[in-house]
Image (cartoon, rainbow, N blue to C red):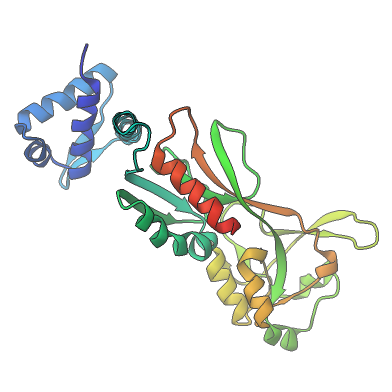
Length: 299
């Protein structure tokens, strides 16, 4: 039987170091032996995983995919062996890659990281923020934290909080431009918009008397790709925004933002989930982080 796990470990080290010679030095192998092992993988897969460039070795798209899967395989082997050796009580360890939406990540996830790493010091946490929709495999993320409806997929999800969006503006903006009393009044206002292809520039409303729901397309002279920038512009008095309640409730409590058209708000659910690739042998560090996040946010 060939030692594919060993080959994967070599490939992972080459990809991380970007050099056959550096990988060989770490693994106590000659550069030619490392190169031959990588070539053996490529021959078996009949595809190129690495290409040489002026900057060293670069992963092809297939190489990126193989690296992601190889890391998971090696991590699962490591977890299995440590769990058995410790009688089922092995502490989570290894690299954990988290990708969160910007506002929620800054407000809820980031403050919990020090306590998580103190509890699980053998975990190496790689944390990134983006408001775009990501592919867990392509971005090499173990967990993505996102709001809104989840598409059907093989991914597992753990609900973290329930929220809804609110239309808000600063008191200063309302003094200067007047307060809308009907969604149709937004036509005369500067409405702040997102610039990524999601249906967030059509704002949802509900008629107070009948409960009928409808949308209004809004317009304005500022666009951005994340909630914190939108909130800052709204606080500055630039215009009206529609943001998650979890993001602006503190500003409303402080009086620096005001909810407008509250009677027209459909309060459509905005669920925020931790999403991850679920299977029978879920890595301990993934399970530990999702449980830690859910427990602490609930508290």
